[in-house]
Image 1 (tube, helix red, strand yellow):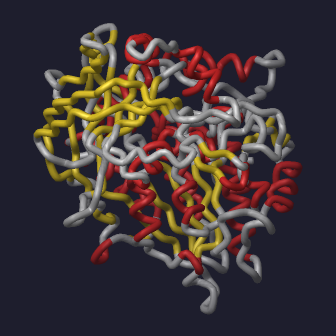
Image 2 (image 1 turned 45 degrees about the horizontal axis):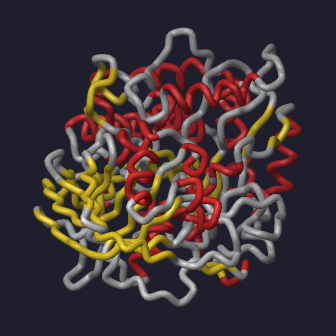
Length: 515
């Protein structure tokens, strides 16, 4: 396999090792470590023979963001019937003000709105005409559970279930703020993940003059949710059960939410890294196949077991390492494919896909001339893979080709083992899909040679609970990168064949992302 495409597990391993080293300081956005990481990625792309594709003849596309870091002495309280509960930063609540101001104060009523979803195509409306403008809405992430594939796609999470949608819908309806009550089943990860993700600086696209934003975008722990809902004589389980029924109606909690948020606000110097290998066909070389991976992680943060560097080895040094190896192999092809290949390493994925969303709004190649985006995000170096997971590929016209390549590489295409986690909406390909570009991620394997049935799912659960978004996501010497070489080869062959096709691929009929 390595001979055919010149792809090497050993090189992917060493790139991962370096990008996940303490020298990179966790690759935080707007930090020295982030600057180092982008300089390194750009230098490796240049050494591979890929040409600069960024601003002004460079390898960089500047992404104008504002960093908002909520200070620990910020306060959030809920009051009703002469009783007040004070929520403690990090233990009880995390979040930020989208207003991008040093001080944000509010004292407003709270309304519980179930899952906060308005989805007419599923005849579902959690708001039922209730005006929530100027109020804080309290809700759960995720969506009503179902095994019916025609109702919120059954077990698979739709975009309605993502926390990003909750905040967007709250803003659309004029809410002052949105509070998500965390439970591990509804979020698909524990409170420690939420705390580590939201308890530090958050990147925002800089507000335009008179642009509206939420004064509060927050999560509270289940325990804090019990206290808040308890002021209204309710419980988390009771309200979650009510929110899963079609006849649910918003509940005026009779509670006021008072916030005093203190924020450090700064303009972030951050960037996407972009390089191109031009195609060989004079008519098609201005069309591109994109390979993408986010370079950012959480930088230096709150220590856990004495370690304050959030290295992000699996998430996402692995994806960047695959990207660099594929760029090297593509540039080394003696006969280049007809279309060009754009290698894109984006910023601020962990802050809500901000770098890829910026690229989608300011593309270096027009979406109408972008054939496909193949994204790599968090691959497991646990040995030789027996399968590949490409959730979302079935939505596109490239799926039959993907099936042929998987068969050729002796890989089974497996479904997402945890569709309720909504992985399709959680990585950078989704930003490009929003722009109409056929896009999906080539994800980690779930079935490994020499391992018993179910081992891959157990390994995922172990990583998700013990290392995901924590300092313990560190490079391990005993890792076997064979599966990453296989994933790279799959994407290499798929992208190459798409680059040589006469027609651009598209979404299948009935999909909502058409160009």
